Length: 302
Image 1 (cartoon, rainbow, N blue to C red):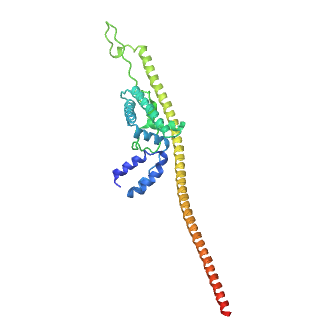
Image 2: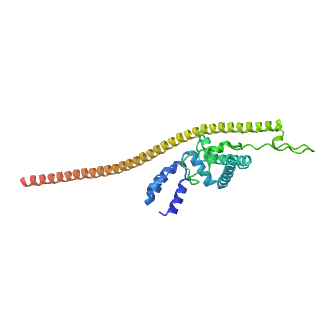
Image 3: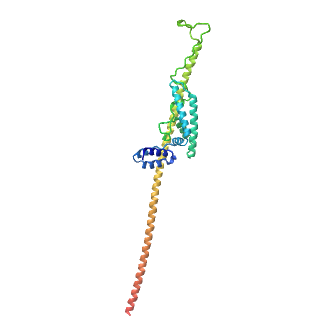
């Protein structure tokens, strides 16, 4: 099978209803020739990842808007965290709005497909949408994603290590010459207060970042745990589905054998009945012949 044709087949595989994935993958592997092993290794996605995949295949406009907003927001965050300027607030707001729109569209796809919208599934969908784009091909996600840490710091525009701006020098009173050298007058108290406030603001921002980072770590742990639980459950469902499919195949084969055996029995019974009838007819003919012989013998005696 040509590589491009195989890619197209795999794309179609990830567009199928989730409960058809395993059987379709196995069927595709049988026809994949040298690529059979790689096809069999394709992972059935959990329901959250499957739903996000369907957003890519079914609503490309919403998908592209989400990816574009994510790229712009990430660039702004990276600029600010490196000490440069960036419109973090508005771009983060635009990204949040794109995530919300994509989440609604994805949940609508999920509902139309008949899958339950549990809290864990909704959260996994939202975190996956917020983490896009990923290193997996679009439309072929095999796991729920977790956002990068800086994405949880939306709205914090002061980063660790960014030096607070220096307060402006007070204007020189009209009619006076600025003092120079050792004779310069001490800075007004207002400058010291402004510097103190700026340092306190940076310290407060540092504390806020640390708090937010701790919250991110906690949420990432919970999301990863839920994703692992969902993945284990998905594998269990897949194995159970395969067992059911095998049992159904065995049942079909047994029923076919039963039908064949029943037909053979009926045919044997019919032949037995015909043989018994032939024996009866032969006995009757033999009796008639014996009777005729007896009559002939009796006539000869007289």
